[in-house]
Length: 332
Length: 234
Image (cartoon, rainbow over all chains, first blue to last red; front, side):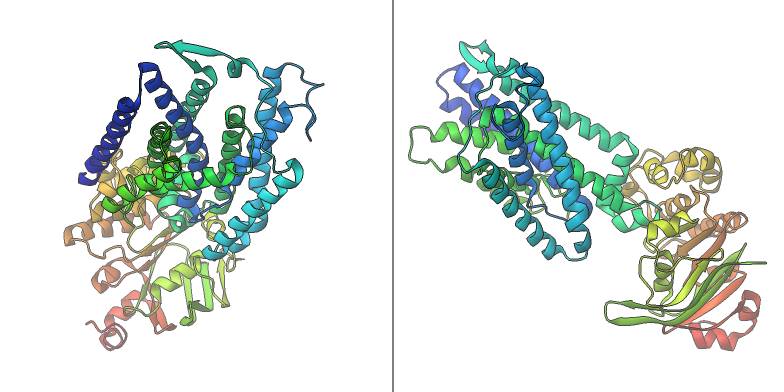
């Protein structure tokens, strides 16, 4: 109970601090709003990478260092499918940009799921009793994914030009123009946080996952095929990361640095929230996302250009100094 | 009476340690068989080998005539074997109800068995929404046994149910295990000789990775020299 109260206090404290800094730095209510919205936007994208990372780690003790690559590949595939002249050409079949975007996201998610399934069944499965090998393997896969992307799409970053519905509209608040797309991503992220949470709490597969995080061996002894559950969870985690990349692409474009940047931030989210804790991942994503946005805002016009990239780590160090198992972590 | 479980001359290693050096255990259909022996003799390792959680390198295990050694734990459980491990292995973050529901092998197992389970362990009905971690040691042990009763198991492997529990709780557990043994065969590991002698009809003694002697429980209780020699109690 004391630990829970402390975590709650820490979360509120960090939030108040971040929002406070954002407020002090802002010149107008609109400016303040932009910082918060971009923080939430970043947080939701992070959640899509970190949730799979966290559940997979909790269930099977596998830290999937290729998780960021699925995000990057998702972004490239969505970009490619939306724009003319790529590998996947949908311009003729789906002239409506809105429909084409939905198809692009669907292709990215399906590819993420397929690649995730292949990685788990083909490469990870023989290495279940060798954690270090798994770490090296997933790192190797991330390098191969990176080179694969460079081979297919070259190293030139792409910025999104084929606009559609929510991507080209804006709304006005406090005399400031906000992109509807950011709000759209925040809404989707929020819905997914709740949906996955309900899935974990209410469904049989959710109960199995929560039980497996605690004691995998006992779950097997009850007659449940944990490996099959793990394949499912791993595949789902990769699909969600690819989904994150696909919906990030209209704003962030597609570039080779996406994978490593999001992986690093997602790892800090997972450690900050507490390894294997779903609530921790959700809260951690928002905190890290906000901290990055506030740092970006703070760094403008100063010589601290590196501030946004080191902020997640600073936050992580601060929390771990006080609570080594993370905000929602079990001491195990 | 037919043989339900037949463990023959199994050898099991944990890491580099040769724990079981030829253990044989036979469990008949109906009633309770107890594994007796000193600490470290290999009783828990025997149960874990049967369950597939450790892989025997030699020997054979058949359940109801079918070989089960080499199968994965979930496949062995699905054949109708319930496991109540040492230290209970209750899922602390799951409610009592979720702990029981998780053990379902077919949809509706829990609903079908809940009346019987709550008759055996009335406390659990009252605690149904509490997280497993909030239960006392005795309540956790009851939940662990109840969990093995949710699916249609034909054999329960119960490891040290009385360990660390108050005498009054042990009495309740003895009564419950006696009652459930009408419906399902039990292979019990029990250090407490008094508990073992109350419950079991047959015994197998495990000593230093071997199973030198087995037989009917009443015979063992008459033979003080044997009890003294293998168990160090009289």
